[in-house]
Length: 103
Image (cartoon, rainbow, N blue to C red; front, side):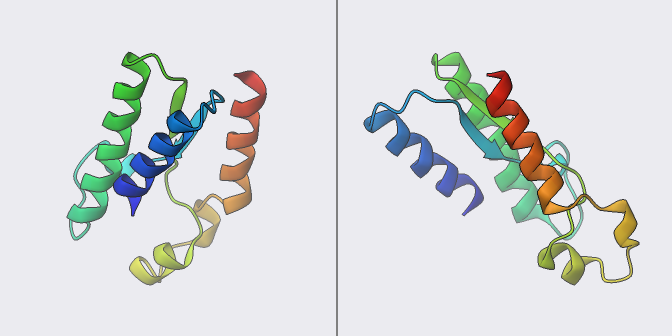
């Protein structure tokens, strides 16, 4: 879903001539391997590389790599983690909105 979904969004954006910025959600887990999360880390690394390639091809594409985000997946994977150390989904959305204003 992480990598293939990003590819499908980009493909459709290009085919519909939507030349707005494309913004994809990657993860800090895509910047380095993570134990017990090899598939997730690999897919997010793929998103980062995909966005870099899109940029080199002349498309206006960005990836955001948040750290800990307060999601159900995070809670399931790290149930004892202090929730105060997590970003909220609204904080991540605010970064996306700010990026849209800047570009």
